[in-house]
Length: 351
Ligand code: NAD
Image (cartoon, rainbow, N blue to C red):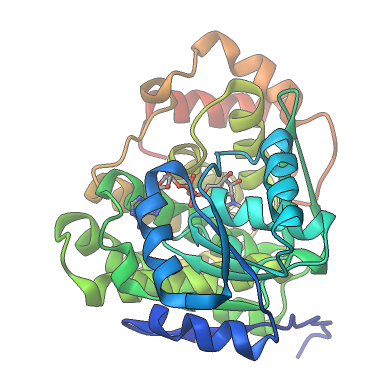
């Protein structure tokens, strides 16, 4: 057996149908007294439901969470939290909402209870991201790791299928990259493989059968695995490329992950055979990249960068940015290789 180092992270996970009902108890368990409930404008009604649930622990609602966590929103939310003498933030929503909670915890001594309603997996990671003047900065800090995560599949029933599919593939991408990360270890690899199995087994049903709570529960369980793997093992080519496409070309986060994943997997196929074996085993396919591409098609997801507003003429610029700083990846990252990958991804060709 190979040597390994594993820094397991603390955190309590409460998982199950209707578990949002235990929120007040979980707040008390942390010794917190005054709560700010955070949502996006779209989910403000879910914020109101949470407000009802927590009675006298409620201090204020903040419904202005936004994609990419703009720093001015964090500043505004922090002023409100400070004025209301809040000691705990409850974030109910996807990566954007939980991202705002993390931004707050980075600046003030606040506990986070995360109630994820997408499959992005941010709730399990100590990774934060904030955007100022169009530039997104990310980092790792254990202060932003939620103390408690409540997964309640019932809360995902309102998630539209065009968000569910890409969000779930975003989670699969965390698992794929965790498998070949230099920080991977036998435990994270088990978690990542199980995450791919759960997500690939449930997502088509989630997208096609809006009311199937069991499928949503399995996808949410997969998201927990994905976030847990991402939290410990690092990221490589796929995430770096998606970060460039999202940050420098203003493309939608989860859709970019969905489109790029089969091509990034193909790029690493020969260099990461053990990871490919695990992906194939988890998905019941003979070729990892092909299996991921077919999953996207079964989900009815967009498969080409051309479908989400990326221009063919931007490929060279994107390849330049993505190869500026070296990072670990199983296959050597070359500009020519990235141009080829992006050209295929632009057209949505079979990888
Ligand atoms: P999101 O949080 O932006 O949500 C997309 C939209 O779906 C929002 O309008 C939201 O309100 C809505 N929504 C969410 N749940 C809903 C529900 N149950 N019913 C109805 N509407 C609902 O999308 P996301 O994909 O979850 O998160 C993307 C962001 O998360 C990106 O900025 C990404 O960088 C970040 N992220 C961070 C990490 C990390 O570890 N820090 C990990 C993954 C993603």
